[in-house]
Image 1 (cartoon, rainbow, N blue to C red):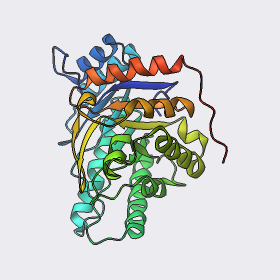
Image 2 (cartoon, helix red, strand yellow):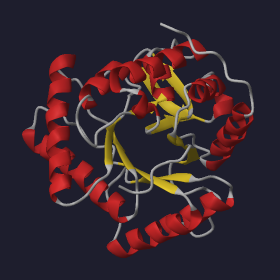
Image 3 (spheres, helix red, strand yellow):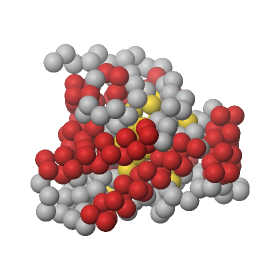
Image 4 (tube, rainbow, N blue to C red):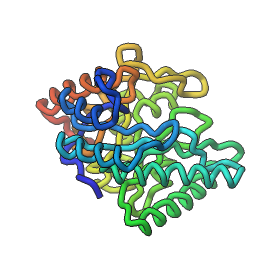
Length: 291
């Protein structure tokens, strides 16, 4: 696999707004200029990256010390009642992983799908089978990259923390992507305290092991929600989401990996995360609860 995170690497979801030439390699370089060290390649509307651009991106990341992740296209629904749509969804994840691997990315995140009429347990089983198929195909092609279903913010979407843990448990090269703002929206605002964030990390550690906390793909942003969960991403100052307390929990659990900021302002909120994170790292650790 590509370079393993050595700490918690922080960066934006996509090319920073302040990048003069809007290309992925230039975005990577701009990330480094800003003092950030991660960036997510956004394939959200389709996987469009030539081998040449992927190689240029890989080189820019290696030279800049930036760790890359990938977001697969939004139109993925592994629980569709139409088998053709499921196969198309699998292909989108595979294509994201292939392009990301060429670009030197470490991890791929995807939205697993919508319940429809599928019960939770059955949905988890179907997604596990799809994950196994995806990872076997990538392994056969010599591609090693983390594949991660994401916790989701809409109540119609499969993707509670418990469901996502169940999706990946025991599958090699599969792990979770935790979006704290999505869980805040999914809980209709209840998931919004240091204690709740700590409980989530405790559950991950209990179910998937401490090594998972050293290998985390995290999303964070401001968030607006309604009766059915997520409505839209916001900048931190527009939202009541307590992101600083989430960072404190990450620090107290010694979490490592990549933290991607999905606020509309991209690098502005990513820099806020970086600055607060560095301040928290200098603070005295809070004793962890003993179960």
